[in-house]
Every structure is written in structure tokens, then in C-alpha cells.
Image (cartoon, rainbow, N blue to C red):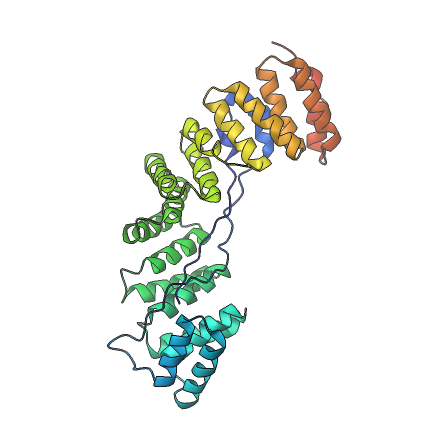
Length: 342
């Protein structure tokens, strides 16, 4: 079994999307969240068997692998342990035990087995993919990069290794290289929406953002996987960050039950697209779902722009009740100054 390290965590859009005239209010929402680390996940893809030029697995190891494919982990473990009694370096038996250990959440033992499999057969693709994914999960970026690159030396067409390399480079903040790695992965697996999404995010995170490339990647991600609401939300936010707030608002508008933070991001995109009324409506709904000082602060900004002094003061009053920092309390106390009609 092979896996790569997927992530469906939603990442907040940058407050930089706010219009300059509203920066004094909207910017207090904070900086965008960092992308979350990938979460562990076993894939149902079959593992690669020992390479033609590598060691030949024993019958017990092959039986263990067959049981693993049949999802009979108990038999797979028993057969693999039997194989290791006769041949402790058997790459397939070690691979099987690595997968079984991951399933049992014995990660350190899984690492040892995958490393043993790769020592016996450096071309064991499944072991390289799974081991690099574990190191990504554990945020051991350098070890993940080392394993992925070693695997790619003999398996350049393994998109999972390119993807895991991308995750590790992303974790290190090497966004140019991460974008290239995700791009290589998506070329090899062009129907994977998540790879397009991650490539778009890394193109935006580069020192010199490639907004055109990111827009193309986000649109392709939605085209491929728009039914996945987590992906749709991330890609929609990405469209806004890359300079297409209308497409951002459209994408986030397809969410069936958006979270308050997603409503706030949609409000930002709608505002940037010229839909102030829609932006205010989104913030009002977000506040009904889960009020916060930051939500009321943004709502006050839009009310101020609309010339609605009463609503602006009401939001700042509500913000004052929810504020937990001296800075927020001070801002909320400036209703007369901030909400005055111009």
C-alpha cells in the first residue's frame, strides 16, 4: 500500500484583500493562518512489489503481501513476521509490517520497517512513499526530502514522491521548489485536484508571487474537485488572494453550510468585487453563527463605508463586549470617531 500526505485543511485568506480605505478596521483580523500539516491517511493503492533487479521476496512474504491487499492485516502481519524469521532483511515483509504498524499507530516501528525495506531494496517504491509521508506528518522535513529524493532517483514517474517532496519543501518555506514539486506531481497525475490546489498556493507564496499561474491552478482544482467543499473553500480563497475576488465569491458561494470564517472571507471577496451589500449580509450571517470581536470590527468597517452610522456603532458596541485585548477594547471605544458620517 502506498500513500502520500494529503491535507484538506482550510487556510484563511489574507487580510490584505481588504480595500485600502478600510485597512484601519479590517486589518485587525490578523494574519492568515499557516497551512496545516498533512494528516495521516492510508491509501488503498497497492504497493509496488520488489523490483525486478532487487531482492526476491520469499513465499511467506508474498503471502503476507497478498493478505495485505485483501485487507487482512492480522494474517498479513503473521505471514510477514514468519518471513522475517528466515530472512530478516526481506523487503516485502518489512514493507507489509510497516503498513500494519501504521494502521496500528505504531509509527516508530513502521519507520524501522520501511527503512529496512529500503536498505534491502532501494527501489522499493511503496516503502519510499510511505516513509516520506510519515516524515511529512511528523514535520521532519529534511528526512522527508531525503527519502523522497532517493526514491525519485529510480522512480521519476512516482507522483506520490513528487507530492511528498512538495509537502516537505512547503514545510521548510521553500515555496519556489515546492511549487515545482507539486507541478511535477500534477503533470504525472493530472486529475488530482488537490495537487493543483497546492501548486496554486505555493505559486502565491513565492517571494515573487505568480498570480497568473496560481489562478490557473485554482480554477483547474475547482474544475476537477469542486464537489469537495473543503477543496472548494481553499481554492476559492486562493482565487481571491490571486486577484480574482468575483471568482472567489462565486466559489465560496457554492458552499452549502459555510463556517463563520468562510463567510468572512466571502465577505471580503464580495466587497473587493464591488458587492458591499452582499459583503455585509455575509458578515451578519457569520456573526449569527459565531460572533467575535474581529467579525464585529469588519462589519463596522462595511457599515461605515455604507454610511450606516447606527449599524457601525452597534457593531463596535458588540465588539467591546467580546473584546479580550486592550487594543480591541480601545478600538471598540472609538465608535463616535470611527462611525461618524463623512
